[in-house]
Structures are given as C-alpha cells and as structure tokens.
Image (cartoon, rainbow, N blue to C red; front, side):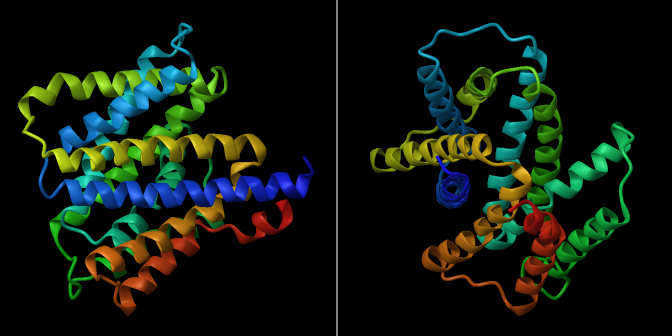
Length: 282
C-alpha cells in the first residue's frame, strides 16, 4: 500500500469512527429518556465483551495489567455514566465539544502526577479550552445549569483513562487489552444491573444493539487507523465529531447552537488543533 493511500485510509477510518461515536451518543441520549444509564451501559459493554472475545476466538492470554484494566473499566463506566447523564440535560453538540477538553486535562494530569513540563503553547491551549467552556455555559445561555458538570467530569475521567491506557499499550497487545477492558466493564455493570433493571420494550432492543455496535466498531476503527498513521496526524480529524453531533442534534432535536455557543465550540476546537504539527507530518 502506498503512503498516500495508507494515509487516506487512516483518515477515512477516523472520520467514520467519530461518525459512529456521534451516533452512539445520539442513541444514548434517546435511550436515557426512558431507561437507566446502567441498563444502557450493560448492553453497550456486553457487545464490547462479546466482540473482543470473538476477535480472540476466546483464546484468552493472561495479562500482567489486570488491576489497571479493572481501573480503566471503572473509568470507562464513569465516563459513560457522566456523559450520558449530561446528554439528558445538555444539547448534543455542546456536550460533545466539552468532552474534547480531555486532551487538555491529560496535560494537567501529566504535570501533576508525571512531573512533565507544560510549554507556553500548551498553557495557552489550556486557558483557551476553559475559556471555550465559559462561553458555552455563560450565565445568559440556556445551558447554564449544574448539569454541565457531567460532560466536564466525563472529559476528566477520559483523561485519566488515556494516561492509564498509555501505560498498558507499551507492553500489551491491543486485542488482549481490549478484551479485559470489556470483560471488567461488563462485570461491573452486571453486578449493579439488578438494582436498575426495568422491562425493555421489544422495539427498543434495536437501539440497545445499535449503541453496542456504534461504540465497539468506533473504537475498532480508531485502533485500525492508529496502526496506519500516528495519532498526531489523525487527531485534527477527530473534531469532525462536533460537526456530526451538530448535524444529528438538528435532525433529531431541531437544535442548533447559538452564535456565542458556536464561538465557544470554535475556541475549544482551536485549543486542541495543532496545525503546525499537522502540516509538517502530513
């Protein structure tokens, strides 16, 4: 495969992945109006666990990072609970934009726990990212409410999840890591499921199947893309998710962010977009 074809294929995988993630979030928002988030996540992680097991043909290798996988699964569950809870109250596009603060939180965590230096450029990005949140959640806006903390929490949990994932990815195969992540997440949701279970309408089963498919296949596409090209090159294309979320929000909820909210989204986009690195690595 030529380098240009390889690059284009990786970009296509990322764009398809964020489209699937947008559909995942939309489905979660719809289901959360009628069902407990625990029930939604149980179906989501059941599909993840079965798909990962099938990829390995259920020939499971032992892992040296079981405790970390367990913690990652807990964080993944907290991400899902926080973000889907936020989607019950916050429009899809704005919640998606806020979730893109997680790379900035990774920088802060690296500074606090790994004692890494934060450059002036990254400091400006962090300030811009938080400025974007303040504009989106301004007192005069219609999403100025305590519930905006839920997508912020989701971004924070995701940042911690990413730091732990870096530790594991250096020494373990992605398929093994993915299996244990799905297994522990499914196990955690199964333990608490009886306390939240409600009867499911037959027509809604397709939505539960869809949320499992969207989430699992999105992460599969991301993994495939990152085997073809570096995350540094592909990261700008993940911001298509905000575009897709805005379109889906308009189609299903007739909601378009107002001018100031769009400006806040743009600032968050700008805070995560490294154009210089993108140009010189392409």
